[in-house]
Image (cartoon, rainbow, N blue to C red):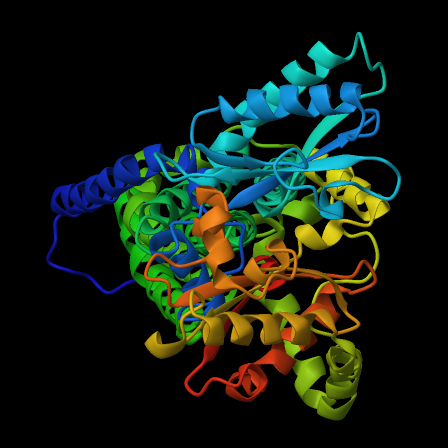
Length: 557
C-alpha cells in the first residue's frame, strides 16, 4: 500500500528524519558509556521493599553499628589443631593479615572466642571477617581479600603444604553469582549472534539488509544496560536485568527492525525512491511498532507494582527494551534506510529462488501462499484449534508442578570459590553460619537487656530458639556470658562484641540462630514464617517486647 501524497518535499522529509535520528543518537551516546560496567551496579541479593530483612539490616548497620552486620567467612583447611601452638600461630598470622585490609571492620576467630563454632568436625577452622562501610559495595572488597588470602596461603605452604584459605558467605557468593551471570550473558551472545545473522541472511538474501536488524538489537541491549546502570543508583535492580536485556533486546530489536526493513524494501520494489520508501516504512511500519511496543510495555509495567526486586527488575528491563527498541526503529532506522536507498540490497547472496522469492526474501513470500494458508485455517477451524491448542494446553498444565523456592540438589556453580568454600563448611558441619537467622529483640525501657528483667527475657527467647530441633546453635549475649544471669557481665565483653549484639541505646539485642546442616532453604523459609506468629511477649514475660527477623536465604533467594 502506497502512502497518500503529502505536502512535504523530499528534502524537507530527509531533514526531519535526520534531526529525529540525531536526537535519538544523542540519547544513545549518553546511555552507552554507562553500559560498560552496568553489571557491577546491579544487585545479586534478593530484596523486598519494606521487608523485615531490610529493616534488620538497616538496624544492625546504623543503630547497632555492628562491625559484623555485613560479613564473610574465611574457611581454612589443612592446618593443625587450633589448640596446638602451630595451629594457633598460623591462625594468628591469618587474622592479623586480614585485619590489615582496607574496610575490614573486624576479624573474629577462635583466638578471640573459644567456641566450638570456629572448629569443624573434620578439623578445619573458620574466621569471621566484618566488612565495613566505604566507597563502593561490599562486593568490591572481594578481589583484594582473595588476593590477600592467596598471599597468606602461599606464606603458610612451606610449613603446611595442604593449607587452603577460601572465602564464602553472602557477599562472596553474590560476587561469584554476578561473575557467572555476566559470563553466561557473554557466552549466550557469542553463540546466538552468528545463528541470528545466518537466519537474517537467509531471510533477506543481502548482507547489508541482514546487518541492520542485528545492529538494532545490539544497540537496544547497550542502551538498556546503560539506562539500567543509571536507574540502579536510585532503585534496587537485579542482575537479571542483564540476562533479560540480551534476550529481549535481540528478540524485540530484531523483530521490530525486520518489519521496518522489509517494508522499506517493498516500497523500493514498488518504484518509490529512497526518501519516499523511508517515509512509507516509517509511517506504516512505525505505527504498527508503536502499538506493539505499547502492549509489551503495559504487560511489563504491571510487574513494577510487585515490591520484590527480582520481579520489578523484570518489569524495568522489559519497559526499557521495548521503549528503546521502538525508539531506534522509528527514529534512527528510517534515516539510515533513507541514506542507504537501493544499497540496502547490496552484497547479495546467491540463494535458491525459494529463499528470496518476493521483494523481501522468505519473510515476504507471495501473498497467494499466505492466502491459501488462511483459507485452510478458517475452513477447518476446529482442526486448527485442536492442532495448535492441545500442545499449548499440555505446556500450560505443567505450571501446576511449579514449586516456589530454591531448586533441590547442587544448583550452585561448582567452579566458584565461594561455592567450594561453602561445601567445605557443610563438610565441617558449620554451614549454618552462612545461612543464619538474625532476630532483633526490642524491649521497653523499663526492661532493657542491661537490667535483670531484660537479661532474663533475652535468655528465655534464646532458650526458646535453641530448643528448636532445626537449630544448631544460638549466639546471643546470654550464650557469650557462659550462662551468667547477671547483666553486669556486659562490661567485660569486648567493644566489638557488645556493638554487634547490643544496640547503642541499650534497648535492643541481636540473637543469631544457626540452622542445623539438614535444614534446607525451604525449611528455613517455613521457619521464618512460623516465627512471625510467635508471641514474644509471652515467651519473654515482658509486655511490649517485639522481634524482627532477617534470614540470609530471604535476602538471596
